[in-house]
Amino acid sequence: MASTVGGYASLEEVRQLKALVNDVLTELRSQQELLKIRGMGLPPGTLQNAQRLQAQVDTLEATLSEDERELAQLRTIGATSAMINSSLDLDAVLSGAMDEVINLTGAERGFLLLINAVTGELEFRLVRNEHENAAPTNGNYQVSSTILNEVFATGEPLLTDNAFKDPRMEDSETVAQYLLRSVLAVPLRYKDRIIGAVYVDNRLKIGVFTERELTLLRAFANQVAVAIENARLFADVQAALADITEINELIENVFASIGSGVITTDSDDRILTYNQAAADILRRPPDTALGQPLLDVLPPMSADFEAQLQAVREQDQRLTIEAQPELPEHGPVVLSMKLSPLKDADQNIEGVAMVLDDLTAQREREQVLNVVRRYLPPGMVDNIHQISKLALGGERRDVTCLFAEVCPLSSFAPGLSAPEMMELLNVYMTRATEAVYRANGLIDKYNGTEIMVLFNTQLNPQQDHAHFAIEAALHLRRALVALYDELGMVQDEPYYRIGLHSGVATLGNVGSSKRRNFTAIGDTINLAKRLQENARRGQIIMSEDTLRHTEASGGLPQNVRLVERESILAKGRQQRTPIFEVFET
Image (cartoon, rainbow, N blue to C red):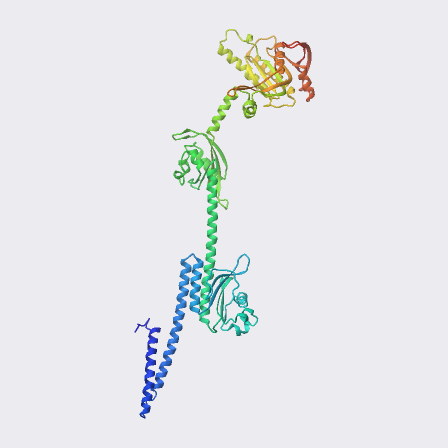
């Protein structure tokens, strides 16, 4: 015989005892019949006591059977709870738990229904019956909407042991049509919200469900509601994590694609973010920079750099710094650093954000251009891309050309060496160049002591170019006269000679595909040169064509007076050229 559990008889032992009692009772009845034939009988009360014992054993069996059934239900609830807490596969957990519920309650069918959070409609999440064992669908299942509506309306379970004859179900077409018998429905409640229901029934038997099954299903429903909400929360967390991961990947891709270096630090100036561009600029890979102090990763900086970092971090300042440190094993570099406070969502400063650019190559190019500007007109350098688009040859434009002799070589002191003469000539050309630039003139070339200037080229377009050319001539006069005085040159009259002429010239590139020169050619240029050659010392003369152009485009500059001079016959021309001398009033 099996041992007792906790000092109490087990159901198996009671059933063995019941069999013995039944055997004894059967034997007593047989003996009573035999004794009756012989006119004898059993002792008084023997048979009654045996029958009473049989009834007691039957009652004990029923009680233990119910207890064992209840214990099995409790074990099922515990197992379901364990499954819910140990598995993230909600469908597998619910499916296994529903199978156990149907088995323990004696239900024929079981349904798990959930309210769609978006549409508000009731949907079948899980179906279990003898005909179907399928994934959730929205098929036309034979369940009582009357019972479900009552459960959702009251928020309380509903138990009926014979729904077909239950007065509460009189208006239910489903109950009447499908002759539903035992039905039990329990709401799925999470906090103060009903999210669905568990529905079980038996269409063949009445009285299948009792308060015990109701208690079981209620406990099951509570666990299911928690499991469903946990699953939803887990799904939300997964979705949020996926979004965060995607955003992080996007940020990393953006950081990786930015040409500027991006570095962020925490409040202790340790590096939090360090993109590939920063690694390329500083010649230090990210894995050796992340988490390190910023000053250990940057090349040696100026003495006040640490104070600037502190000002950004503690005083909410934004600074732009250009530094010229030296990278170990790579030499000097020019770095532009834009420093800003790094703030959290509450606008609290948590560190420093730095945008880093390597300006070394740019500064080298600027130095080269500065050198080139000493040899080429600024307009040509700044707009070199426009000049490059012009094919060999050029285009015809209406221009004004100015030729000026700043000082004849014969005026130089005798005995000067060639380097000394070159140095003095550069002094003249520097003053002349500054005067021309004030009037936006484009210096085409220097030729000994002479300078050629163009107005209204592709590089300095001017509608009133003759006006600007006259202003340039006056600037030249003032600058050169002042220079003569500074040099202490004794003179009866100034040494300069200036000529101006307006007309059509061809402007463009001359040379070859490997070496080009931007210049202007044509009769207009030649005549401007002839006017300069025919001018006397200290004289500015211009052609009648230049006068006409100034009159057509707004007039002469202020304080300018013209005196018509005798026309000249320029070399290479058959007609005489009317000229005017330019004076300041």
